[in-house]
Figure (cartoon, helix red, strand yellow):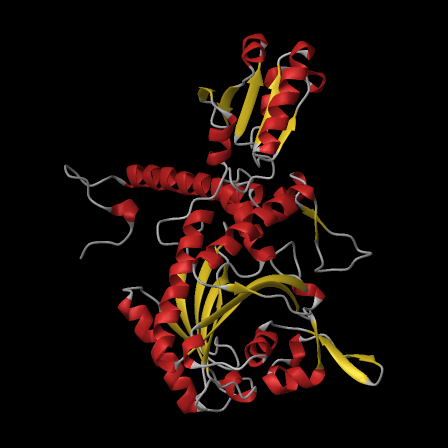
Length: 439
């Protein structure tokens, strides 16, 4: 019988002596220790809480409260770039964008089922003029009322609406941290109202959007999870509805050839979900994007289209909450964001004060072309020092006497390579997100 101990395997010529095996084990253990130390160091170095503050992306203040981070200019720039990309991706795929209030009357959430199944995660009601208002825990009820606000026919379906909106969770202080667990969430949310026979196609189309966005953002899914109902009062008691919705999601995943795990008790209270899981550098898993099939809320809100038929409601979030998304992006990219989402896309570095006017002109042309560009003056250090200080910026534009005379700049990439003189319009095109044909 062969031993499973890697330190006691036979060599091709002779068995190792005990001392050789001990040396081999020692070296293997040393390699494992170095690998573990390197992995731990990378995890610490790329922790979004440390990097986010070092790079001036976000911060917190006890006067505002736990779980309520605020975005600094650099972080707001990253967030706005992502918002604009997702908005355009949705627009190109037939979504109409809406805006809805972050408050609702308690009766709204009693109707939606949140009050019965989700109240422990909601903030308590606020009494105003004899009525009770609640900070919303999701956008779904508002979007159901958007659908209900107009008569609909089968020709209107599928109706795809999307919104980047605030939602609020009454998280306990002990679980809050950085951007990953917060009390105020800006959610990229969307709902597709469709005929039952259209539901599978809309689920698959939503997964197309999610996968396109993940590729553009540089995100790799850890796994796909089919989240099913569990036991107890947390879940709506309608086995037939659950079975019908679960079969739609399962069929779509099989048709796409996508491996997935099934987990009971992870579904929403009203229906099953496909959850796209991500992992941080330490291997901790969380849900980023999701697609859900819901027949419960259309019934609760009495949604119809001409003929008395009831639509299916497909919930989908392409990138989830922006707080968790940006936390993951910080750790994935280590602060060296792709050019299209970088807080500063280009820094202009004049060699001396003599090139300042020409450098200022380059900055103005970059800004006019839609780039986020800044001037870093000679008084802030030598050229080498300024390059090192801005090593995470995608493009470093050096303006010396020759470039000043020609009205351009020598482009240096953050990997240290030189691109020569590149027209501003070409640089601006390199700083735009890319949409694949058909997106």
